[in-house]
Image (cartoon, rainbow, N blue to C red; front, side, top):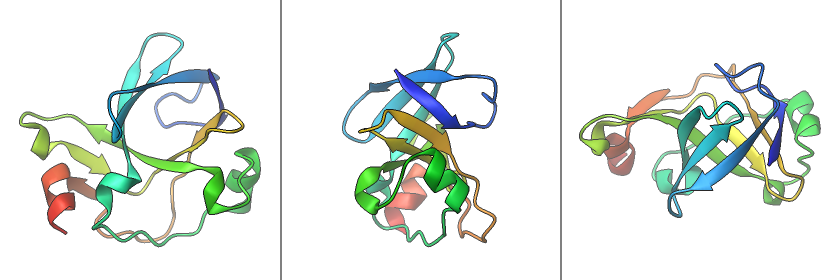
Length: 124
């Protein structure tokens, strides 16, 4: 189980979750009530440039002191066909595997694009 150190939008009252890996790129975040959301690892989006700062409160809550301390995921709204699924690029979910902490960060900086389909991310 992972402790939720920073609230996840839509699941603000949840305190912990487990991560079910589907493959090397996609996972489910499964909350105590059985609800789950799909997330995609940032490595899938290698053609998309990300440049935003994480505030100190988030870094402290998730015990992050370097890039090696966490992995970055983005929420996915599944569509049919899957290539049209939408990825939210402005509110990443960080996972500190060593400390078993997870949390979402909503950037206040302008990120382009802020939503994209999986096929569009692959083409950027």
